[in-house]
Length: 349
Image 1: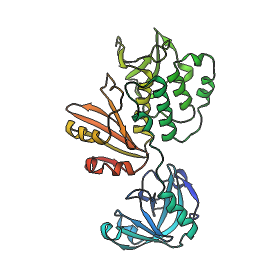
Image 2: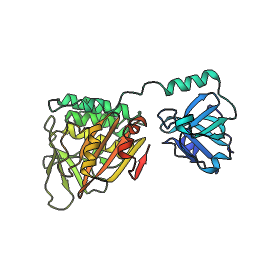
Image 3: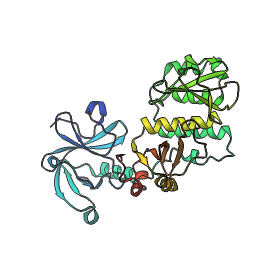
Image 4: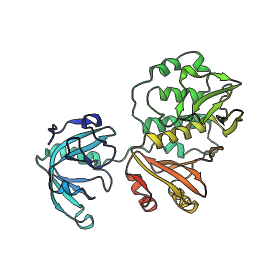
């Protein structure tokens, strides 16, 4: 087996393995790793410094060969706990596990207690909490603050985009409407866009009274505002010659909230669930648990946004059905709605 150093943090790049979810992973040398978080009903549990209770099944080879046991503590890194081996199978209802693994070298009592305490600590505040609290009477300042809190809770600060940082300090940048100016400052510290493109700060140009700031990834459409207003409506148009501008959202601040949720769900979600064949009745049941946000649906695409209890998402009409995309920072919110989505074709939690 590859020689990993116990109690050392390894990045996904160093491991050459995807570590976004709990569960088995085939390592680059052909051995198996098991990534656990110790949080949530299927995240694994450590009742002692040497034992791991795993509630799901594993490939047959993991019952007969030693495995590498990793603790996921961050999105892109994992702590190596050591080599472990299958001991016996059990019943989750009776024993609390389906598979019992044992570490070849037990953890220290103090470190084991530290891991268990961290796993059982209250979850962090839900990123969408201030967005869910918005109402039709909320102000632009309320919406901008909710957007900032969501971004700060959903993303860890990453490498700054120096061009946007520099641009955001220039005098002409200050003439942008405040919601857009604040978004650019958030985007300068984190990668917020992976699906569509935020126009670079140096490329913001007013043409025929419209400032285009967001472009679909294949150039199918673009979104723009009248930058002379404090919180202007957002307009969208297709890329065909002569396509007119159509009002997409009544306020820029509300649209930006939806925009960052859309990008987070599609590109930056540790846990996800997707189904492009959700009926209207199924969507109504789902929205009893994850209610619609107090922001109008996008006018052109009819995309509606919702969020609550640690989950955000959107629904897009798909003939007589809906394409629904959901995302969360933690596994537990999805466990709470598992009965509604257990048969979805694409589950990542």
